[in-house]
Amino acid sequence: MSSTATAKRREVSLPEVIEKHQGRPGALLSILEEVQELEKFRYLPETTLREIAERMKVPLAQVYSVATFYSFFNLKPQGLHSVVVCRGTACHTRGSLELLEASLKRLGIEGFREDEENSVTTVDNFCSVRTVACFGQCALAPVVQIDGVISSRMTVGKLTAAIDKLRKGGQK
Ligand code: FES
Image (cartoon, rainbow, N blue to C red; front, side, top):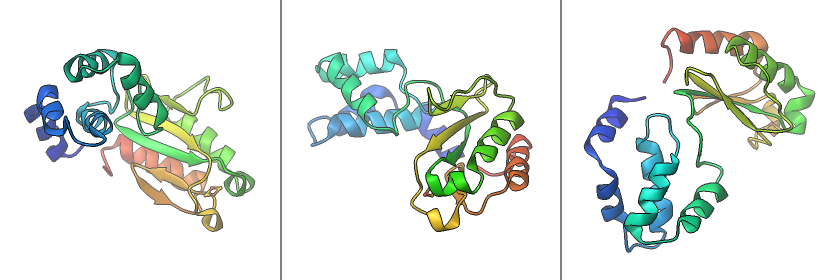
């Protein structure tokens, strides 16, 4: 988390975020985006969604429908770091399952069911592991994104080394 984001978290309150956007087209979407960005674990707690609905005087169901429609909104706390493994066909044929399993093992995550969910977070909120259908870079498969940075032709060795580096405070 950058110091700028940390400073923003301290300085901006929910009422201020709402006031900034309210009345503009797409206000609810913009507010949810900004509020999630300000939240330490990049998610939208239920209490926050309720407060947004109350302050904006819109039905809670409307707030939830926006928060659940867009995949970039999270309703559960996310890790401070993120590893996103592409599980599309091109990446799968080039070993992305091994990459996914290696990242889960390196992070000590057990019981993740890829067929039931597309993300999981370590119990200490250190890192979230997520799968995506395709990054649109199939020629460079297998592709993994670490803290927003795409890496192509990933290997288990490079991925576990990158995770170890995150543990030691590198990148991000
Ligand atoms: S399948 Fe992985 S980038 Fe397209």
